[in-house]
Amino acid sequence: MQNRNIYICLSLIILFAQSCIKEVNPSTRQAAPILVVDGSITTDSIPYTVQLTYSGGIASSSSIPESNYVKDASVSISDNLGNTTVLKYTINGVYQTTDPSYIGKVGRSYSIKVKLKNGTTYISTPEKINNPVPISKVRGNFVDKSDMYFPTYMSVSIDAKDPGNEENYYQWKFKAWIGRKTKGVPCGIGCIMFEYCYQKYEDYTVRLLSDASINGNEILNKTVGKTYIYYYTNPHIDVSQLSLTREAYQFWKRYDDQLTRTGSVLDPLPASIKGNVYNQTNASDFALGYFSAAGVTHKKVTLVPYGITPFLLEITANQFMPTKSVACFLYYPDALKYDAPPAPQNPTPPGWENAEKIKVIW
Image (tube, rainbow, N blue to C red; front, top):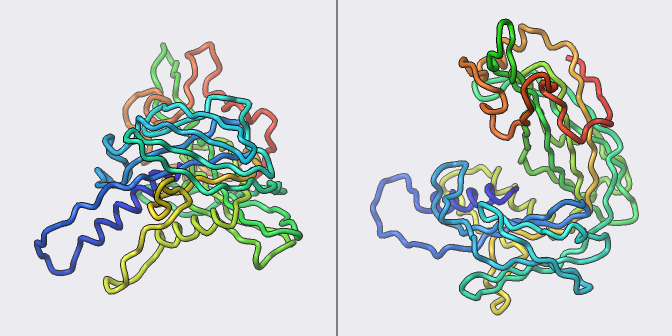
């Protein structure tokens, strides 16, 4: 989810506001925590999630303090026809729908309602689900670039045909199962098990497009993600293409601009990005983040790499393998588990049995 990035972006802004070239020790003002909302409903028939946190200090650049998760709110999603579903709390501030029949419909508008423990209620401006636009082609390209943090990778791009009779705003999300390797676990004379596994990977880069300059034309070779090459195997890719509202597009564009902004210490401090969730009794009291509704299409493919030599893997990927004997799926987070022999070792992740295979030449 994008919530962690929203949270960290806000916290870094606060920290930056307190910094100065010359060290001084002024009295500091403790800003009141602000509710951060990150959630969506789409045309996917999957559980929908909403994450609630409070702004505040960060423990590290990649985590939210446990105390900042909102665990005791009442959360629901409603459409413009009066249909409502209640979300159930799971973990880490995440609330999830439980009714599998409650699925986002094209043409309907959806909003969220969040009632906090103290009685304060936040609602969102309704968002209409636009028609999803299909992905016509997916391609992969090798990128010969590696460093001490990541090995070489394959860049993934898509083609799509933009409808010419309407405004369209796109966002792409990218997930993959990538191959990983360890020394495995001995299972007898000459026997090694659990040496390979597939690890789930998500690319959280914000990727957006407005059709203002290409209305009715082809979207060609739009980069939507990357998959790292830790071992010679076939990555399994899932690209989501979302049809956003104009308001959602503008929010994520401002958010991305703040993440990527550069300048000097004399530049004005970035301001908080106003989303579409606000206090029901005080419309000027906005939460951070956004609740969106979008049509979505998926494209699942399997990339089949050719031309990766043992030498290439040696110089780019072997440094990321553990030196001890350990089961692959126990060592790497979010890896796909499987049983010991005689069960198949390193099975393909479910859902890609009939996926298109795309050859990628080094």
